[in-house]
Length: 327
Ligand SMILES: NC(=O)c1ccc[n+]([C@@H]2O[C@H](COP(=O)([O-])OP(=O)(O)OC[C@H]3O[C@@H](n4cnc5c(N)ncnc54)[C@H](OP(=O)(O)O)[C@@H]3O)[C@@H](O)[C@H]2O)c1
Image 1 (tube, rainbow, N blue to C red):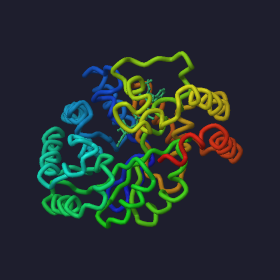
Image 2 (image 1 turned 180 degrees about the vertical axis):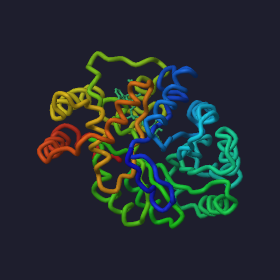
Image 3 (image 1 turned 60 degrees about the vertical axis):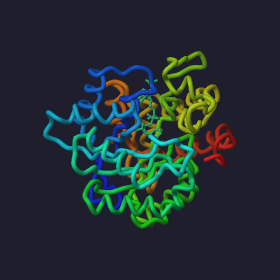
Image 4 (image 1 turned 90 degrees about the vertical axis):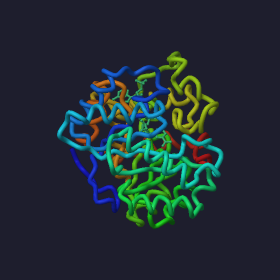
């Protein structure tokens, strides 16, 4: 699989990574065997980038990664996150002591002395200008507790602020066919700064696979049920903030633009992979079939000019007014 340098970290990562939120919680149940099969299938297919967080299943996602990697000879790049063990609205909890203890816990969960990458996990806005946060992260790099740090952001404005910090080595942000705003300013700025970009929620929580219809329902413990209106966290993380029925109808059109014989999921991922400034996509996958379907994006041909302009028109007509100015 194509590998790209992740900014200035010195690491190369596969253009299709694996998101592992679903291996922790919030996506209905994924048992230990399924989690192991998903991780093995991804690594066997050439995925060298895993994205996780200390709060996914309260550490379960990180622990499942450690378990799956233990018997294997290969070491993918594992990007984790810190900060959501605090109240996500309380910047005062981002103390050096808390950050150190959250990061030490991730080192134990993942069974490593040095974490490859720690991303601040969509922190409250005040954290982006808190010198103490960057000082402790720089110290942790110095101490080799972490090899690098970056940020995962909700908005373009937060991403632009984070890029001003010289120690920030990676940026994670929602980019997909229904979330185009980062293309305008943020991705070019990241490229200029030499900062790698991990594009999350690349399938708009599954909408961009084209497989749902207006009658699709999700389990009670799936955020696509309980966070439809942002009840638990930023609504932009659920279907990329697009109301479900509108997203289903628009995704039907995306499938038509992809054409018969081209799986919509791989088509949607290819679109993201080819955006200048994007290093890798990190789709979540709940089974081996989905892993393989996503990996196929790495070898799919780039979209044609007419497909690209059809997608832009679709966004302008159906989606832009709902999301563009919000994130
Ligand atoms: N704040 C943050 O930093 C943050 C927030 C959100 C996500 N993330 C990261 O980004 C990763 C990816 O985002 P995401 O998981 O939220 O959304 P996503 O990748 O856009 O969507 C994942 C869902 O798409 C469906 N799917 C995936 N591959 C498929 C395929 N080939 N064929 C058919 N269906 C497929 C599955 O839905 P079904 O379950 O319906 O089968 C899966 O649960 C997460 O795992 C996490 O690592 C980070």
